Image (tube, rainbow over all chains, first blue to last red; front, side, top):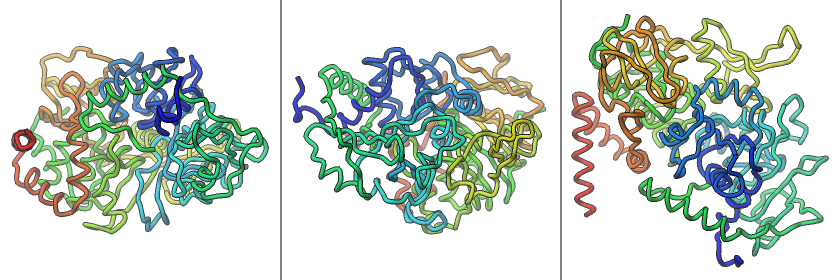
Amino acid sequence: MSSTEAFSPDEVMTVTAARQLRDGAVCFVGIGPPSEAANLAHLTHAPNLVLIYESGTIGTSPRVLPLSIGDGELAETAVSVVSVPEIFSYWLQGGRIDVGFLSAAQIDRYANLNSTVIGPYKRPQVRLPGAGGAPEIAAAVGEVLVMIRHHRRAFVERVDFLTSVGFGRNGGGRSGLKGAGPTAVITNLGVLRPDQQTKELMLTSIHPGVAVSKVLEETGWNLKVADELSVTPPPTDLELATLRDLRHRTREAHQSWKPASG
Amino acid sequence: MAEITTLAEAVAEFIHDGDVIAMEGFTHLIPFAAGHEVIRQGRRDLTLCRLTPDLIYDQLIGAGCVRKLVFSWGGNPGVGSLHRFRDAVENGYPRSLEMEEHSHAGMAARYAAGAAGLPLGVLRAYAGTDLPAQTKSISSITCPFTGEELAAVAALRPDVTVIHAQQADWKGNVAFWGITGVQKEAVLAARHSIVTVEEVVDELVPHGPNHVVLPSFVVSAVAPVPQGCHPSYAMGYSSRENRFYLDWDRISADRGIFEEWLRRFVLETSDHIEYMELLDEATAQVGEARN
């Protein structure tokens, strides 16, 4: 059995995210922690998970984690490779994706995400990379899983820029959208899920060894805690061994590779 | 019909100060050599379009060639920030940068509309986001059949699209495969196009996944430039040099180091062959120093 000393917070985050993916689901994957989680699921409980990257690679099974969204191995192992206009129009907008992973620099209580700027748009303190595929992933996939490290700079009362919609500024912003929106926000401290009625994120699960007070401290709004707060089951030996092996192979393949930060 | 020419001649003939230029490539087949040649020839006031401006646009921005960026994701893939891009946006260095910002889906629809000769692209996009408020080329349209409100984006029609491909034949037909991004649409949307290729072959035969052929009559110029997409890759010819992307983080983070890099590797080399030789030499020296 695993003990709380035997794994890192990042490993729990990745393993917990991987467990959200059911076998056979069609998953739109981004680079970084989401790619690691999706590939872990694919290598453990979900061998029939279909991995799609926005570079147009459908049904990939990379041996190591890609450094970029368009690494050659994604194309070489794909069932099909299509153009970028096609991946976004026929596959994403067409409603063929069950689950999409997103990350961001900021998230608010309604799971709206910012990956555009910190500060005002015209005169930002920090210019971030921008939207990429995220706004349409957020709108169109069956459900969205968010992976993001838990700290006050990221979990904010109000996102500086709304790049990808969760439930809108007041929780009522998904009318007309096909997908259900975010169903889980997985962090290195716990799991947050939207309240069924209000859509406000609530702490529903806490990772082993983490205090609730720590989560509240690292959240920039008054975070609600579910009445039935559970403790995240710790990673199994198989999950940990598979994840570490994947990271090891990736490190061997890409010089100086480090697990990406979320 | 495409003429087979040199990269320097193609850039001199087709790319002018103030032009709207798309240098496309989605991680794979990025036209780095062409970008360097634009810097060498000192073009200014360019509007650069691309879904994923990465290192080559960072270099063009840092070199002062760019007035405006039309884009959807500007980062160093898997590594982090584009520091020259950030310096331009955050500090106006070396000059201020206008921005026209979209999502990937929006940019793809804009090129597709341009390729189809339509004034706009229609898609489900941008719902609930702050992007439409900042970007004039995003609007909405009501479907005349269902009444549904949809996003509308203005067609994107570059003066010149530049891409890198695996092969051309001697007639100037162009072939590329693997991850093909939005290059076909970007070429068809543009008035002119320049294609650098790994090699010119007698006959184009289908290769690998997702083989795309652009017939010669939609291509303006073809220039053979082996490894013209380094440090990105050409499937079947080269591997992505991840080391360079990691190193770029350090080179680009400091104005002085960047400017020295630009002078030594781009401005003071005459072409891509010399650039690659110098890069190999520098890499070997670093390797020795590390040993």
